[in-house]
Length: 473
Figure (tube, rainbow, N blue to C red):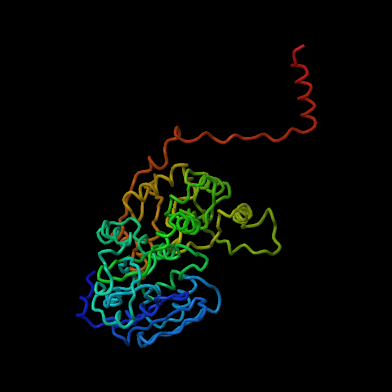
């Protein structure tokens, strides 16, 4: 994609700049910089979300023409404030910005121009950290460049800029959502709401968690070095790094499965699993399904959920012959797995398993080996393959699908198109033989030991006499 050249095009999309603010001691400087933007004023609105400030925020004299204050009716925190602003926004593009940032004149234009090319991008601006100098709002509005206001040679660079440079503008990044951490970024309003907005329960790392869910929606993250800004004051990590890291860990551990480094506690269950195992159990007997579910839950990779697809809605609750029930097998399966939180029963699988990053699909009568999922994920992650297909005997297949690839295909295909053709272009599809993923029987773990039932009274009496007879004198 080639975006329009700055200053040499005519924007058409409206932009809503959403600024959460609690107190906002530098808000006047932020708004002054926005008042000097090159983006057309009639296409830009600014929503300052007053997140419980005391005293309440009032707008300064120097600000963009279409600036207003909105206040959450319930809740508190950055996520809640951003959602409040996005819900009140009229613009086709949502621009996230903080109340202590000063942007260059071209900032909004630089990020918005990409969204005139296509509609599934998240554009990311650059930022540096500086100590706030004594500046007036009028000085900020009149400055042609950030270098006139701040000593950028002494600025603390953002770690995200180093990552962007090292990965060729995220083209070589394995997880580009990592750099979408906090302001500034812009995205279509429809994409914001499709991802569910920010999670108000996440109090630290809320932008990273939201960016992860955006990735599961199939978006492309595009950094633009022309969208420069400075953040007034050092980030929290510089003030108390140890506590900042600890505070964010539980939120990301539960909600971002790709952070495998945060899921090292053995035996734990997480809010969002790593892999969804989808098995179609229609017209399948209960023993076959029981064996498949047991194998799925007993693998080396335990961070999974099992989805059984079948006509569960057919199972009514009225009077019926228990043993002669025509839905006997299906009802038996439902009753068997109804209370296991790791097993879900649905009539039809969703287009993607988002926010779960991977989905396995395979024949229900081919139980997973203990190593199958672990090795399939390892292979897919090595090359960032969109779909890994294991060619099973008899012409059947088992698939490990990457959620972001499925979602990207959904954005790019029309009804009737083959999503695999798109995934083959965007992420790649690999075919492999089953030997590594279903190892030979000699490599399988021993069969489980069967514990005999307790003996009845007659058996106990007989065992007692046998023990007495065998006891040495």
